[in-house]
Length: 113
Image (cartoon, rainbow, N blue to C red; front, top):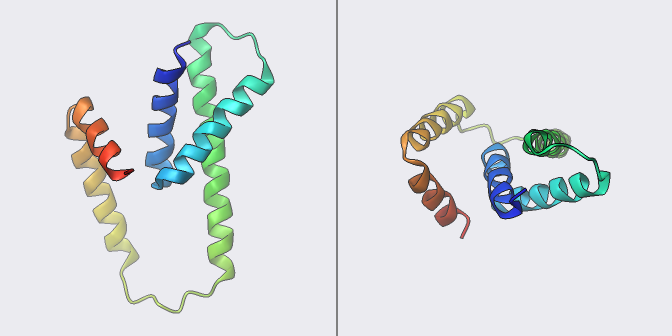
C-alpha cells in the first residue's frame, strides 16, 4: 500500500466532510492509527475501503461532537439564512467537482494554507 497516496485520498475525503484543514488532518491521522493498531491482514483491494470506513465513522463522530456543542449554546443570532448557505455550499462543490483533478488538488492546497 502506497501510504502517501492513500493518506492524500483520505485527507481530501475528510476535508470535504468537515471543511476544516486541521480537523481533517487530525481525523486522517486517527484513521491511520486505528487502521495500523488493528493489524488486520487484508488483501490490498480491501485496505482503501476499510480506511474510508474508518474515516467516515470519525467524520460522523466529529459532526456529532460539534452538533452537541452547538446545541448546548442557544444561538440568538439567526439573522442569516442557513438555507442560502447550504445552497451556496452545494453550488461551490459542484463547481469544484467539474474542475480537473489536478486543479481540485491545487485549490484544496491553497485553502489549507
